[in-house]
Length: 129
Length: 319
Image 1: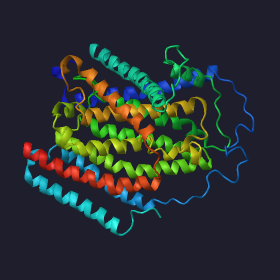
Image 2: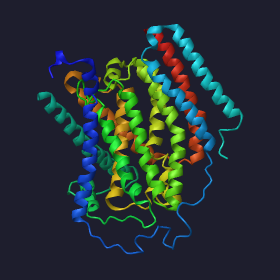
Image 3: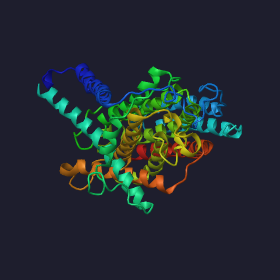
Image 4: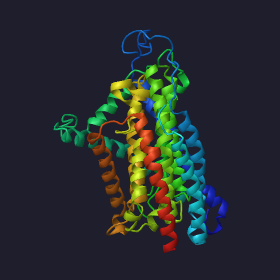
């Protein structure tokens, strides 16, 4: 594992080994906590205790009740914009070297997003229904 | 072998920071909030100004019964707290606190941190759905609504810093940082911090857990250790958000004697931002969900786009 003999690929993937390790550490930490919990806790389950909480009275109907999701248009809008935003990152690291041409391209990009936002705004999409 | 040892030491450092700093922030919140409200806060645990209050809380939580509601989706209900907590540990791995003082420097660090922070929110969604409780369901829906609002300005503000620094590595961003960024990136800093507050569901953006309306939102059915993990995740989230704000916008370890005291600067800046998070909780009332949508789509997103234009022009002019 001498530095000079390390190829680009092992260096690249090597930097992700600690990442995997910390995920394993995190999972082990959670298991350790619940292991300690299992040793120390009492267990007296009663039907009342396992009942769904609804301010103390018996629950009415199912917990997975019908609700009105009032922001689904926001969700569409969000998906479109978020996909756009992801493209900014690879571009962000190289654009300064490309000069004003890339700034103009950036202007077009931001312009498209801004026009899209203004359109949605004017259409009244950005209001809570 | 020494490389392996170094990696193990770095991982251990990250784990210790993950277990200590959120508790520190929690204790500061107890005390600072109490004094802002004319109270004294915890005074008994550990004798000196209640310094051990959160340790005592931990000892209590670990002894509590494990209750899973009969109606719940058991598997999802049980792993949701871990899904909420572990991503913040992973995020801490790549946040540098000094030159070379980082768990693991990734060349896509910024992108990675934002992606991982997004995973933490899934834990709240899982808890909200799997509880089979009406309050939890409404809370989960509010979490999802909040996600729509803050994620875009959050990402755009982060992209602005990446453009200014010309790199996605968090270490590289701190190295490229210059005091005049405080002015140049000021809009992005505010947008990032505000949308980050919404991401970690802190007041004034705590409508997913609004206690006066929906009990405790997605965490209503949780108790004992699983509840504690959700709370720990909230404070770990504050730490990650504060550290990221400090590293991206406040220059991280940059300051006088940065070669020796760099780590101290990062910690001081992080704690200062965390203090603002606490301060904001005491100072502002809770927004409604639609008010957050309006703030985000008609305020933060246009501001972030303006910042991108300012950054693009500035970066090319100084390149």
